Image (cartoon, rainbow, N blue to C red; front, side, top):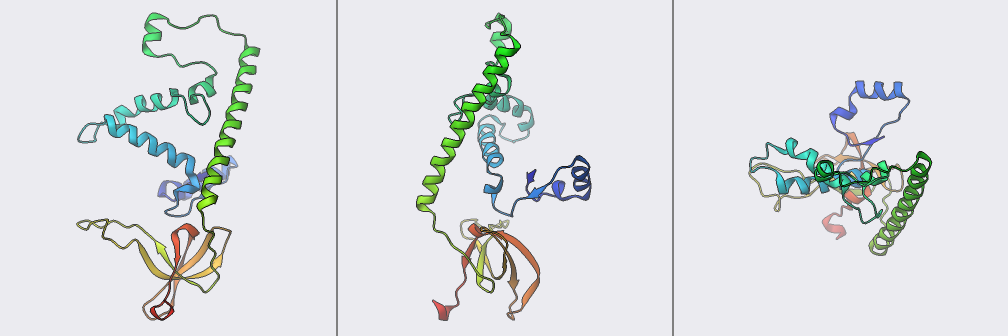
Length: 221
């Protein structure tokens, strides 16, 4: 299971519950929603849809959410060619008018036919999804510049912190400097902040390479 670092996911009771269930929980790196990209993208879509129908005071979002979710789940998605509803239940969704006027076929297929259709439909959806991911990877790789850091390198870290009364456009988005302590993987680094006296802080953090940029002293520029 992948989650962000919210308190509801880092609590001891959650860790114990997952241990009892035989599940493993991994936390995403801070300020890097791409770690759990599918969930983040779905949430962004739902939020955009909610913004079109929520009241001006934003207090009725939970009343609107079930209708928004149903609309999302029953809409055909470009990547798979089907709606999530169809991929799960292997039949078109029934809307209010269908229920009132019985605009649907009562001649249900056999269980064997339904299982066969489900297997074939989901197989094609997986192939479409893989093809879409490959196209996205090609576009990303054509523009991506691979950057690596070594232990001891000084870096700045992207932390878009909002402050009340100040314009977000004028706030500094990078903070630091930090020193690289260890390269944990191809994209994750353990870092520590440097104090004003140049000493390394005892507090460390793990961050994604996409949030880092090299720190250079004026003499190095």
